[in-house]
Image (cartoon, rainbow, N blue to C red):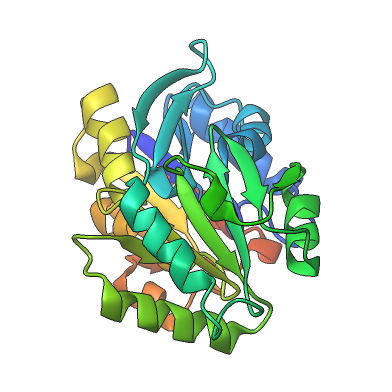
Length: 271
């Protein structure tokens, strides 16, 4: 199996608690690129927030963000390869649900339009999020006043049990053919268009952009939102602190992000 493309998640994969890429990981990525294997980023982050990681690893490929809802090329005039927003009617249904008495005071809801972050109000959870992402949050009150379709909807809560319950309830209301739902960390519920997932986005980069096959791809991720791309790739690597179910579908399990797991995975398969 010849690997001709390496795809990396950001949070929990190349960036840990410091929100930075550690030098051993950067050095390993540089070696991969020097050997002629291009490296791509696939993240749930918004484009503006993910861009510094794309630049730091000196990727020459389009940037996969919003779980694949937006694929945009920073090296080619910010050319948009794909943008797949949620439909307005379904978005309003979701916002109505989040505003119900059960959920109104338990969630911080984030709404992404034109790569800007809109929120109902600046909750502590939202403030922590914008500090890590280095983005501005625009408070608008009732998000239903924004009459447009978002690229992604994110609901946050420090109560992981609440997020698990929310995910369960939404999946009972909508099929996978109606809505893509996932969690990238235990405190995030994410919703996007049903055609969106990292696996399909990686397929586009590999096959449409580079003319490769799945067996030519190695992908590394750490959470539920990485499942589809780990399944697609010829070599799917889960990080050491990934959920057990994610590890179970991976071809190999690397050490944790804090132990420079990506560097170890590169040494294992691409050295």
